[in-house]
Amino acid sequence: MKKGNTRDVILHTASELFQRQGYHGTGLNQIIEKSGAPKGSLYYHFPNGKEEIAIEAIKLMGQHILESAREDLSEKDTAIEAFQHHVAKIADVFDGKACVDGLQIGLIASEMASSHESIRLVCKSAYEDWQALYTECLQRFDFETERAKELAVVINSLLEGASILAQTNESGWPLRAVAKQLPALLVH
Amino acid sequence: MKKGNTRDVILHTASELFQRQGYHGTGLNQIIEKSGAPKGSLYYHFPNGKEEIAIEAIKLMGQHILESAREDLSEKDTAIEAFQHHVAKIADVFDGKACVDGLQIGLIASEMASSHESIRLVCKSAYEDWQALYTECLQRFDFETERAKELAVVINSLLEGASILAQTNESGWPLRAVAKQLPALLVH
Image 1 (cartoon, each protein chain N blue to C red):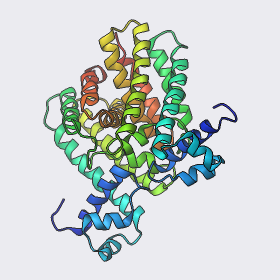
Image 2: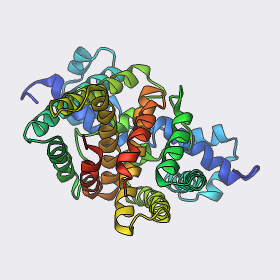
Image 3: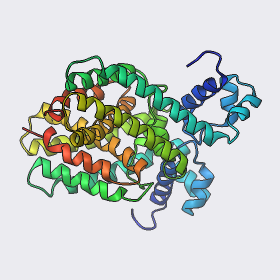
Image 4: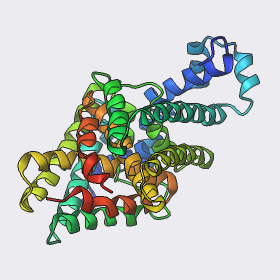
């Protein structure tokens, strides 16, 4: 996050609140108060209000996760090692923490997919970006395109689901259990 | 759900609303209004209010999912077939639907785990019940206890994560992608 960038400060605060309290549980006044942004600047940057803030916050979270994932996946010599490294990094973040800021769009996705089409689509697009990155990584390690795409969906499901379990358990162990089974999944 | 059981009608309505709108987005008055239950009976059955309703609703959803899963898993002759059948049944429910009633505790788990310890624990316990059932099923098909337990966590993660993707895509295809990869995961 760039320092002094009011728009990003608002988005960062909003995404933290959405993750802690859900979309409906978070009010614009609370976003203004917690971010310290002047009320006018909130309406200047987000003339369409809360829904627009949520959409931009999901985009920002999505990009942030994408960049970390890209970094994790580039550091190893096999697909199994690359994804195990990525999962282990996420597992570490969850240890002993009930709430992981900026990590998860699953909450807002499941809360809003049925009622706000625009939010559903931006979540769908974040998931597609991650899957494209996973596919690209698997192809680099000689998986065929179709299989790489299928495995990318499965890995994405594993990560989202194990993150919910990790949050519920206040521990990264469910992600480590997933990492341990990756070799079976990622055989050529 | 037993007909005429006010307590269950309230819980069913509440769990539907929690899943659509999140915990914070759902008010007691809305639960009363939508369930048609007299206000007094809500306070009679749930003297501790919304948190108590959420806890009992999660228990009810958890039991409901557990019973369907037990049925699905008992109908086939191999572990792969049993879990593929189970996943396919869930996939069918998601086709073309943005919101699946009574199916998912992931939303409330991720929304509340960080702020309400009692809700975190009841979600954790629902996940443990499902994992115990999966473990039992895998043991029946000759998986060793330790491996069965680990795989149960992985299957649970896959199902929760793929359900979020299915909801975001308004289609069961992410669950079908998961089903297709189960044979690799469930080799002896």
